Structure formats: C-alpha cells, structure tokens
Amino acid sequence: MDSPPAHHLARRVEEACLNGWPALREVVFDGWLIRLADGHTRRTNSVNLLSPGAQPLDRKVRYCEGIYSAQGLPTIFCIPSTADPALGRLLDERGYDPPEDESCVLFMDLAQTRPQPVTGVLLEAGLPGESWLAGLARLHGQNDHAQRTHRKILENLAIPAVFAAVSLDDGSPGALAYGAVHDGIVCVNSVVTHPDFRRQGLARKAVAAVLSWAQELRGATGACLSVVAENASARSLYASMGFTREMYRYHYRRRSEPT
Ligand SMILES: CC(C)(COP(=O)(O)OP(=O)(O)OC[C@H]1O[C@@H](n2cnc3c(N)ncnc32)[C@H](O)[C@@H]1OP(=O)(O)O)[C@@H](O)C(=O)NCCC(=O)NCCS
Image 1 (cartoon, rainbow, N blue to C red):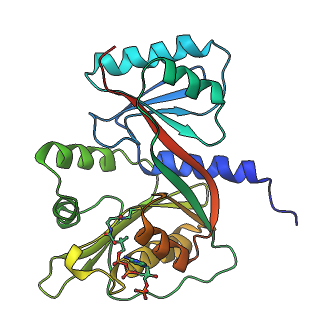
Image 2 (image 1 turned 30 degrees about the horizontal axis):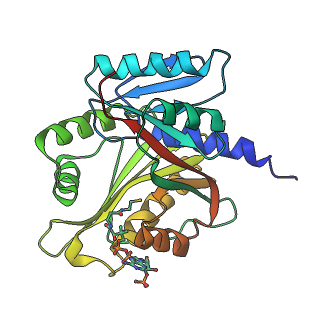
C-alpha cells in the first residue's frame, strides 16, 4: 500500500505537537491559532499558522498583537519553513526581532518495530505525580510561577499521556520525559537528564519507556518531537533512537515592545 502523502503526515505530527503540549487559552482567527499560557514557554504563547486563511496579513498580525498586548505578553509567531515569506517581511517591517531558535520536528515510524522492553523506569499514566513535577522543576530550574503554569498546562492535556522517570540511587529523578498520543502518534516532550548524570543512557531509557508504553498500550505507530536545531546532544540522542525523518522546521519571531 502506498504511504500517505508527506503533508498528511506533517499535519498529523503538527496536531500531535499542539495537543501534546496544550495552551491554557486559545483564540482562533482566520486559520491562525493564538495560544496563551501566562507567558510560560514560547510554544504555548505563540501564534500557530494552521491554514492560510483569507483576510489581509496586516490585519491578522495586528489582531494577534492586540491579544498578546492585552495580556502584557510579547507577540510571538511560530513560523514553519512552509510559511508564506510575505509574513516574515511584514514582521520585519513591524520591528520584530530576528528569527530565534530554529527547531526541527522529527518523526520516527514505529509501525514496523516491536516495543522494546525497558526496565528501571517509573511510568505514570494520565497526570504526572508530585515527584515528577518537582523533579522537572529542579532539573529545569523553574521558579514558582513557571512550576504552577507547567502543572496547569499538563492538567490541560486532553489526550492519553504517560510520564516517565528514571531515579538516581538516592531516589531523586535522574531523567524525565513524557509522551502524549494523538491519532496514533506519540509526541515526546520534556526530555531532560540531571547535569551530573549525562551520557549514562538515562534519557534514552526514559524516552524508550514512553515509546514502548505508547506502542503497547495506545497502539501508536509513530512518534514525533521537536528539538532546537543547535541542540547537538539532544539531536544525537534522538537520531540514535530512530528519529531520523525531519518533517519540517520552524522558528520564532518576537516583538517585545508593547503595541
Ligand atoms: C539531551 C539530554 C536529554 C541527553 O541526556 P543523556 O541522559 O545524557 O543522554 P543518554 O546518555 O541517554 O545518551 C544517549 C545517546 O545520545 C547521544 N548523546 C547524548 N548526549 C550527547 C552529547 N552531549 N554529545 C553527543 N551525543 C550525545 C549519544 O549517542 C548517546 O549515546 P552514547 O553515550 O552511547 O554515545 C541531556 O543532555 C539534557 O538534559 N540536556 C538539556 C535538556 C535538553 O536539551 N533536552 C532535550 C530537549 S529537546
């Protein structure tokens, strides 16, 4: 059987990424998804271009700026490599900062692989426990506001999810990851290892446990994630695990000045 066209898969992957790390509030405007989450992470506080729409670009950009400005937040656009270049030119004219953090969205086909047995990983399905959340806050150096918002975002997940933790000898978290499954694709997020315990296979274990859970218990046939293009260690980890297909890239454009 022919595989579905790449743009169908790219759309499913995009949806898995959006649903796997949900915003707290959203506004839809002429094909654009304006996401809000009290300023915590760019992915949940940026405009996502779902479809071209029909209204003039200038009007749409001003509308988005009005939404973010009312929240006291910078306007941030998440711009995929496939976007109309006219948007980038308009953002230049409107004084947006240069593109930041080019990122790659990677895919791994799980349909032909069997779930790998993984031991030594604590898995919690549904919502993360206190220990997972506290561990993430510690490993990411989150302040109280970021911790609270992070928790709210995860509580907002409306698709099946699993939270993985690899503990150190003293019981504290050595590596974490989670995955959420949408339309047969598990989106992997929040992969992090304690700085003193890197290159010991902990992240590989945490991610592998998420993938196995998604395959075995949720019938996932694919996995995706996004990674900053310059993050050589993470890219090397993901490539070694089989995330070899780049679906698309994106970058952010931000205007920090209030409109
Ligand atoms: C990326 C990160 C999660 C890797 O965690 P880790 O526990 O050290 O990774 P592992 O030990 O499981 O590495 C498995 C493989 O990934 C690759 N890898 C991991 N770190 C690497 C590095 N610094 N340089 C090159 N390759 C690396 C290697 O292939 C490695 O296998 P090897 O050690 O047998 O050569 C960790 O560096 C980290 O927490 N970074 C900060 C947070 C982050 O960037 N997260 C990813 C967000 S997308």
